[in-house]
Amino acid sequence: MSRTVKTMAKIIDGKRIAEEVRENIASRAADFYGKYGIKPGLAVIIVGDDPASAVYVRNKKKACEQVGFYSEVHEMSADATMEELLEKIRALSCDEKIHGILVQLPLPGHLDENRVIAAIPPEKDVDAFHVQNTGKIMLGKYDFLPCTPAGIMKMLEHENIGIEGRECVVVGRSNIVGKPMAMLLLHANGTVTICHSKTRNLAEITKRADILVVAVGKADFITGDMVKDGAVVIDVGMNRREDGKLTGDVDFESVSEKASAITPVPGGVGPMTITMLLENTLTAAELAVKQQR
Ligand code: GUN
Image (cartoon, rainbow, N blue to C red; front, side, top):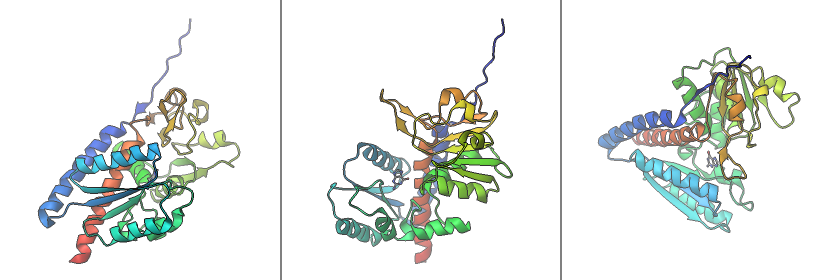
């Protein structure tokens, strides 16, 4: 009787890597406080009562406390007006305790996300969503990187996964993840392909990938037959199954039999994203001090 031996991918432990990076951030923040008497400060604005957003915001506040940052959460009602939200951003823009401002997305439909992001001063835009920061990323000269792609790059670096000259495929073209992710892989000299909902023969392209990053928001969308043997697979998805369980965009069971390394959900990309928000807030505080001197 023949037996097939299934190989299992290395599971990239984002939680552990995030903890390591956070220890380093906490120690830099303590040095910064010792030198200037200033704690890096983050303000998070949340509009409405979307339960998923409430969890993300709570986690951001907790993470700030963990590394010794100052933080504020500003809760606004779901029917807040554009003027009220812009006024809040204006007040935080002038507040010296606050080095980073983050408006949790998505916003209720009556609010214009682009106008809101444009109102955040670029030097306090710790999401790196402002056009000025987006443009700088395109040019490869930036102060902040969007948190999720930055966290993924940090993970790849931590795992000694080289990018130069390798086939990198990004599935998803969002402004928050897909597009900046492709740009960072390109800056690292990867050969980059971006796939999206209109891509033909998706599996043919994903099968070329040495490094496959998936950010489409569809549960278990990428299956083992779409992945090359030995590929590194990064799952950005965070979907809730009908039974209430969290699952990524990658079918972990079948893909982990093909990949050489894979990020789990939860415990993969998610913890790295918040960690990079902390890193950006510290950078914003450092830049603010430099500007004053
Ligand atoms: N909602 C989901 N992800 C993000 C993020 O990275 N930043 C903000 N501001 N909102 C989000």
